[in-house]
Amino acid sequence: MTESAPRFGFVAGEASGDLLASLLLQGLHARWPRLKAEGIGGPKMLAQGFETWWPHSKLSIFGYVDALLNLRELLSIRKQLGTRLIANKPDVFIGVDAPDFNFGLETRLREAGIKTVHFVCPSIWAWRPERIEKIKAAADHVLCLFPFEPEILHQAGIGATYVGHPLADAIPMEPPRAAAREALKLAQEDTVIALLPGSRRSEIHYIAPALIGAAKLLARPGRRFVMPVVPGLRGLVEPLLRDVGGADIQLVDGQSHAVLAACDLTLVASGTATLEAALFKRPMVIAYRMNRLNWWRMKDRGLLPWVGLPNILAREFLVPELIQQACTSEALAREAEGLLADAPRRAALHARFVQLHELLRQDTARRASDAIATLIGA
Image 1 (cartoon, rainbow, N blue to C red):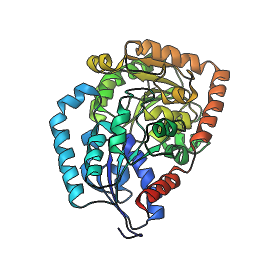
Image 2 (tube, rainbow, N blue to C red):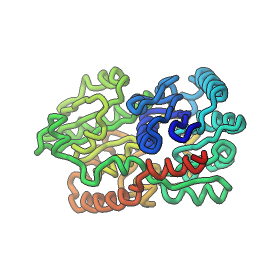
Image 3 (cartoon, one colour):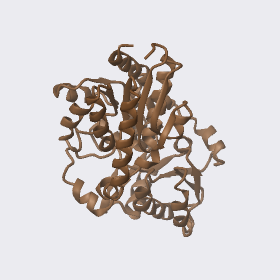
């Protein structure tokens, strides 16, 4: 390494990992303008000059069933990637989320003398606490998005730094509602409901029909529905929109942040998008359904009563959660109508989401690059 041009290995899975990694890369570029970064990533990372050896879509799977169906390819990619990184060692490897893929790779790289950073502490406080030993073997340092996580890791002897959430830096405190509506060709006076089914194929399969069914029940004059879809998955969604009754559903490629800025309320799949909705100060109903076997394997592992990130951070049910059998179109529509009809409740949610935004806004890119620089002695 030269001080001005360190090399970074990266693996970021799925759209959320691509977004987080791209925001981290912005901070790293501010510190080291001539850095080199390569590995597995997505289009947002490419826009930061990242060199992609495999696309992040290869890791866009969820649950035990999907993993088993794709296991041979995933293991092959991980082996090839590890061999390539060891042959031409980066100054540090950064695994962004995707713990089932990254922990094994990080452990191998660490044993080969490569410094490893894991960005996004796995939710050991909510699911699978046994992962703490895997983290200890895999990561020299963990960059934590939430303020309570470093203490948990420090108790296990794992280096960790609270860096806040990069989305809290990227999303404005006052979202540009009018401009977003103009860009999406939505009338300023309409009630706009965002439908966010998730970024995985399995989520489109299991969640999108329930959201679309809820839109049909919620349809009224002056109500518009907008569904952002990850590029490449539009073909899975379009057949679901052939019979939507009186619902006016607009499909857009990507632009989830514009959609959240424009909307009055969102029906949203559990995951990073729920935190994004909270940072955009939008009331929401959280939805999730999955393969029955995946649900059977996971349903008794929950250590917390909440699954949605806004509720976990608030440690209370700020917004409704409709999971698995409870995730029906009728229930989604009922909860949405309740929020739309209750202005004081929406105002209270807005105030709580402002507090959450302030808590997570920590100049994440700078904090993260500081921690990485300390780790590699740069």
